[in-house]
Image 1 (cartoon, rainbow, N blue to C red):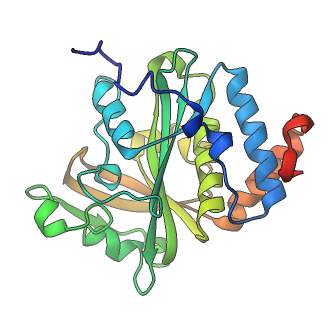
Image 2 (spheres, rainbow, N blue to C red):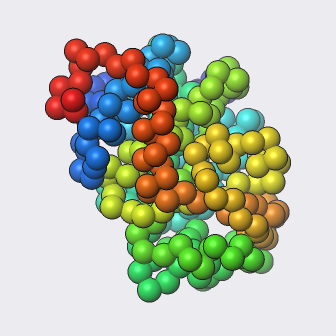
Length: 265
């Protein structure tokens, strides 16, 4: 059976097993700060009629294919055909509307660049593929001139696959979902830095700080990638900077349902 345009076979798969708060485990702290933030952020999403859930990489890929008319193909960093996704190196958080339809996505992937750095991973295409020589597209290459790219090493989170259904754009989701994903990445992995790439047009519209990045460096050049060729900004934020953004947010928005604080109080 062919699904309606824009609908994924996973849109109706909603159950408590992948509910965000019920599956949340704060492995790395500060537990109190992050726990309060997740409760507050989930409440803000519910006020918009949306709920947060974890999703498998196959669900992310299928949702992308079902919405290709308003979403570019997934970058290879998050393509399930480009690497083996596990609980140790990948997660995806989605927002669902009351019907169960996925209307927002954000994913994170963990890299261990001990002894190397972002610059080397990107230019060798190991950032994008487990086996670049076999998986790369004809003529595909990545050039990096951003000076800070050589300083990002060790355990690092790559954040991306950000998408919002047209029905929900302009409702502030881009100020919420990316931050939730970054915060969860810091509870799941002891990473020092979160990075991403952003096309020039999106950067010009102010999305870098909206997504929670404090450092913008130029540039990364993609040639014949799955999303085409172009100049991108290299974005990064340190763990302590993300935690400060979270603390500032809670200070400005202190209302949390104390009845559900539980072990996070």
